[in-house]
Length: 368
Image 1 (cartoon, one colour):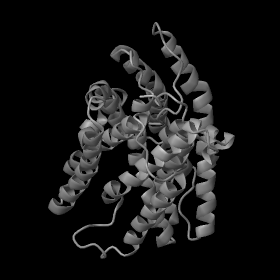
Image 2 (cartoon, one colour):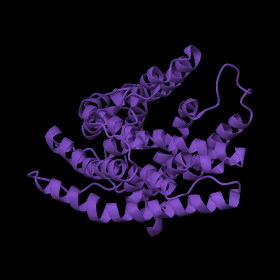
Image 3 (cartoon, helix red, strand yellow):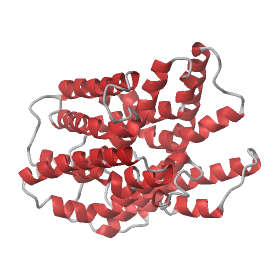
Image 4 (tube, rainbow, N blue to C red):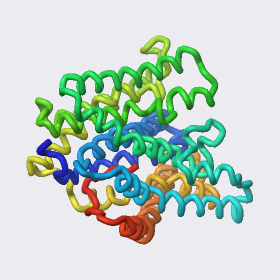
């Protein structure tokens, strides 16, 4: 696998746009004056499946031939747990001392042990977005075995597995739509770690194929156009919800439609870096935003809640709402920059130093 390990900084830039999309999804109610913008912001949720695919790609791309499971697991723990712990403490403090809301010790336990995505009762406990870290933790746990199995597969079989990953995701959405499960059961069908694993597997297959020299016949420009076109198609579907019989135009249903486009965008962006071609995604501002994206992602719901308690609520004017959302985004970015520089980086560095034989931090790592 000659290409593996090459720096792919463009993926860091892509992470920022995915994180921003999820922010807009959670701030979508501020666009209630414009149904078009509200529906467009709702599609920002698709940053979550993008992160899951990207995570699989990056894990396989930077995989070390002689890495041990203990070393790998510790690096992953050092990467995501410190920010999870700090933001959880912050949420508990806010709920207790400012918002006067009850705090469940069980919720804290489920959150800090990466278990909440396995429970319908604690799925959105405390900080709503941390359920995705629970999913990521399962991916990390399964990665050594999955990678060992997939890397031994011939390329044609990897392509079949990738297609099955997309089909499986589509199948879970169709089943959930067909049988109209209650919200709790639906979470297990479409949002549990097992249900979302096909996205991670798709990223793994794509990275292994690229490392073997398999490349799409087109470049990042076509992949970007394909992604933009797929997102536009999803948005048009929300504008005309009866266009597809028996299916509701909502973000969960869009996952399978967007998975191929997201994968090709990630692959072509990585190959652009491998070839040494110029990429706007490697511009310093975007790289910095990408580095902050994990902290931005994990704290944005909390910052939005703080803004709401300070009096920022949807108004009757779209212009004012846009200013409020912009102010909330900038506040989130400031908090994220602080968390990245003074919590995430030093904590990860400190935890990694506790492991003998540690290596340098890999480039282009996943944001989730």
